[in-house]
Every structure is written in C-alpha cells, then in structure tokens.
Image (cartoon, rainbow over all chains, first blue to last red):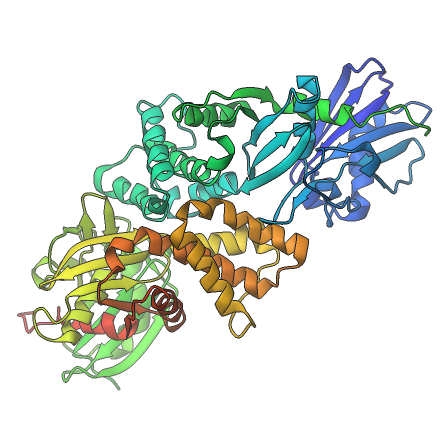
Length: 306
Length: 306
C-alpha cells in the first residue's frame, strides 16, 4: 500500500505518465496509459487520472502536479502560455483543474510562448526547469537546451530564464515521410546496427546543413536510388534522418554555434543529435528526459495550505 | 457508336484516363476511373482498361498507347527507364503488355532515369514530349520544363533531348503537412479568394527561397501563430504553400534562373508556380497538361503492322 505525498504527471498528446512521490522525494510507484490529451474530452481527464492513481490516494488530499498538453485549450483546463523571457516554471502561475473526487487537487503548469518568431511549447518548459534545478546554482544551467522529438525545441537559457526558443517539426515530418509518403517503399523500420548507416547519416546531415536548399530535391532521390541501385532500406532510413536533422541544425545554427548544448530526450534520439552536433565540433551533455520532468515538477511542489 | 483508330491512356498511381482517337487525330470520347496502378495487381490491368474502352473497340485490333506508373515494376509490365540524356519518348522503346482480348494491343512508354543525382520520372516524359511536339521544329522546345504536382519535376531540354531533371516532393509534403500533421489545425481547405492570401504566399515564398535554412523552423510557426494570434486558416494554407514552393524554387534555382520556363500542370498549381516565378522575374508560359499528354502519346502512334 502506497501513500503518495504528491503525484507527478507528464500528460502529453498521446500518453499519460504518473509517478507517486514520497515525502522524502523518492519515487514510490509509476504508471502510464495511452489516455493522452488527444483522446480525451474535458470531463474525461479526471477519470483517466484516477484509473492510474487511485491506489496511491490516502485518506487526505493528494496534490497532483501536471505538465504538458493537458493544459492546452483543448485539454482539461487551459493554462495560458507565459511569454518569454521568463523562468521556465512559476509556481504562482499554476492553474487548478476542477475535480469531483475530494481526495485530489490538480495543478497544471502553463507552457511558454514567444511573440516573434511566433512559437509555443508545453511540457518542455518543465524539462528545462528540471535541468536547471539539477544543475544547481542560479546561472549554472545557462546555455542552450535541445529537446529533440516530434516537435524539437531549441531554447536559450540565461540567468535562469528562457530568453528565446525555436520549434522544428523534425520528428513529425520524419514519421510522415517514412511511414506515409512514397519514401515508405524501401525504408527500414530501424537503421540500428546496419553497416554504413552511421556514414550515410552523417553524409546526408552534412549536405543539408551546409546546403539547406538541397533538402527539397534530396528527399526524392532516396526513392530514386532505391529503384535504380537498390539502396539498402536501412541506409534509406539513415539518410532521411540525416537530411532532416541537418535541416534542423541549419535552422537552429544561431542556437548551437559556439554554445554549451544540453540534450534532453530519449536515448536513441539524443544519441543521433549528439552524433550530429559532434560532427560540427559541439560536444553536448545529455540528460534523461524522465529525470528532468520529475525534477521540474518537483520545483512546483511547495508546502502550501491545501 | 465510336470506332477508335487508337486509344490514349494516361495511367498513373491513382487514376486511369483514356481517350478514343479518330483516324484524323480528333478526340472522339473520354473516360476515367480511379483504377490507378496503386490499386491493381498485374492481372487487374486488362479488365480495368476494358471497363472503360470496351465500347470503343471495333471488329479489328485497336492499339492502346499508355504512359505513367502502369509501366512501373509493380505495374502491368515493367517498361525499364531510359537514361538521360535522351529524347523524352522513343517509339522503339515501347513495351507491349500481355493481353487476352484479341481486340487490343497495349504499348507502354518507359519513364526516364538519371544516375546522378539519382532521379526517375514516369508519365512526365510523355508530357514533355507533347510540349516539344506542339512547339514544332527541332530546337523550338528547348528550355526548362516545370511539371508541378505530387512529385514536381524540373527538366532541362536541349536539342529535343532531356539533358537532366530533378524531382521535388512538394505536393506530397504539402498534402501530408496540411492534412495529417499538427498544422491541420487551423488550416483551410482552400485559400482562393481569401484576403491577403496572395501576399502571405509571396512573403513565405520569398523567405524560404532566400533563406532555405529557415524552412524547418518556419513550418511550426504557422501553428504557433494560429494559437497566439488567431492566424486565419486561409492565410495558414497560403503560407504553407509559399514556404514549400519557395523551398522547391531554392532547390531548382539552377533550372529556372535566366531560363525560358514552361509550366505543364493543372490550372491551379500552374497559376501558383507562375506567381512564384514571376516574383523572381521569370515569366513562364503555361501549357495544359491533358493536351501535352495527348500530344506526347500521339508521337508514339505510327502506322505499323499490327
């Protein structure tokens, strides 16, 4: 029997991940479901949450701190974006969601917005806050954060504030092109361990990073080489990945050039971005995304009158 | 009752379009179905063709000349690519498909291939051949041909031969991003007649044409502006179109810069590309795609012993 002091919720478009946290900050239990924001109407969030956390609720009130798309306009309750420059998280800006179950109080962290160029993030601000908390002192987390994923984020942090950021749709475009476009023919499910995949990745990366105008033409050549010379499906995948990450690095060059870069992402994606950046002479450090999310949500957990 | 002298078939991945041609070259009848190559197994092509052309077949043998994906490896019978530089069509390279019905003979035109950069086309070579035939004399069709579509083609023609060409996946990427990515939220079905759409298109076009490295970052800003400032859905569509066509023009710059350009495409797409090129000081002429296809197939129709 677990009695959580509080509950950390990472609630994105596709998934809900919750952790029961003890009074000493230890993770007592974890659970996850595919009841992401994209599948829920506003009155579906509380039942979806209870399906995972009910066993962790004691006789009193257990607070839940949540980050991600749960706070979008189409989510449980809108937590309006905070405009940069600002700290990634602010406990005073939490929005409380309406609940029926008296054992719960739910607080949702807002995302960040930028007026020009127009940009938004939801969820990544919590990971950045976690990275800053893990770094310690006020300016110890200064630098650039790259959070690769469906919509990669690049954020410039100075004196504990997010100064500017930029989103790139690399992950989503990769998924669409590799699974639904003509490139799906002759495309492997993975390029791990394939001979020459690392070189194909770096060659393609270098091409669009140095000549970004070539992206549009080079994509179809993956298919053409498959037809004409039997390009191996694993190399096709490595090349597509390289072309798109190269285009992302070209777009984000002002962020990473000559800067200390921290990667926060899944192991596989972080490794690909680390290879890509290393080829440009940048050696990023890598942080675990789950650890950063928890550290970020922990900064919101303050003793407060419930 | 129609008795076709021959039948012209434009047989792509998604559609089959046939025309009955009289002895004097006049179009006697037209028909179309959605039985494209993508839906047919090899033994499904003859029945699909007969469903449309049976009423046009006389007592003798009627030849059918076909272009497009019907000649792909997964098509009716493979018509191997001819390598550029070469004329767009060659009657001697036609591949005859196996048929059961003795009233038919079916001849399929091969596509073109290019070794480096690897590229292929199937169907567009017939449209280019038609444009050359319509232009008349040997060198009268010299210049650059742009065939916008799912996979746009840019081809350089000199002395009646395709010297080089380049494919760009603009149409397919536009469809995937506008219908299936996060950008589908806040994206109109059309931008026709929307106030400011022309300006939004040209602004976006100019941005990726002059700074192609920005494409990756500017795509997501369409979504962010929708969330932050309520970007009108028609302007979102115009901007996506402009960003992608700008990236295509950046990739194809060696083709169109300072060259006479001919557009062969649907009316809507040709108009968008003509606007885009005009903004770069290039005034393309525009040809009707159906007329070019027919003129191309007509060059294959020679009196021959059946």
